[in-house]
Image 1 (tube, helix red, strand yellow):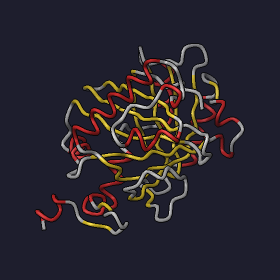
Image 2 (spheres, rainbow, N blue to C red):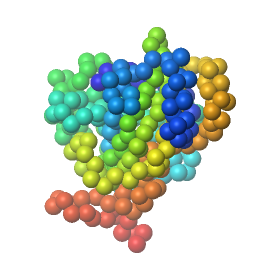
Image 3 (tube, rainbow, N blue to C red):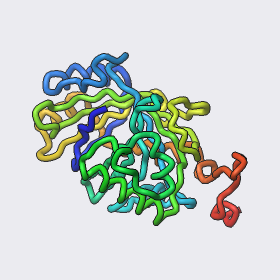
Image 4 (cartoon, helix red, strand yellow):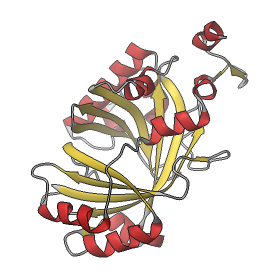
Length: 265
């Protein structure tokens, strides 16, 4: 999958129903093009899977709950199960109201290496763009600093509309957002015990890199949208319960409580 993310942007989130989403689709199609990955898919949406990493005491989760102005998330993003399909190590930062992303893709055979804290060999990189390697280096730094391990698998179907000229404006609608505890990095799209984070509601995101487009203002007015928070990992962890997410597996695959959890109990 091509890397067409906006590296730094503003994003406004809204929770909407399916009937509103269909009307928003009609409105947005006058200004943007459907993303090529979704154009041929059912409901114009492609699957997105992310494995979120966090510290034993869920420090990254807590920074959002506490409303910290400067915070970040660590996740490994993937789109399919094919052994040859790359996986992407991502750091998503929020600094005040600005969102920025670093992202580095690697071939799956290098997954063990990166999770062990080692930089992949050049031939294991999905791209020779030096920014990809820098992103993975930064990811490993944060992972080691926090003693972060996989905690939860988040998945949804994304309908994405993009400005084809410069990617400065992007509208996404994410359906069937679900989460399950996953302390492994098997990177499989299958989910055995999913919890639906927002029920059957849809997360609409209006993303822009420069000036807030006039037609965004019009869209919000016409559909009576109310901006809100919709953090998939954080809201999902809250739904499942922190204690369940803090669980990890021992060498035999049996769940064990983290030290922090033992202290609290």
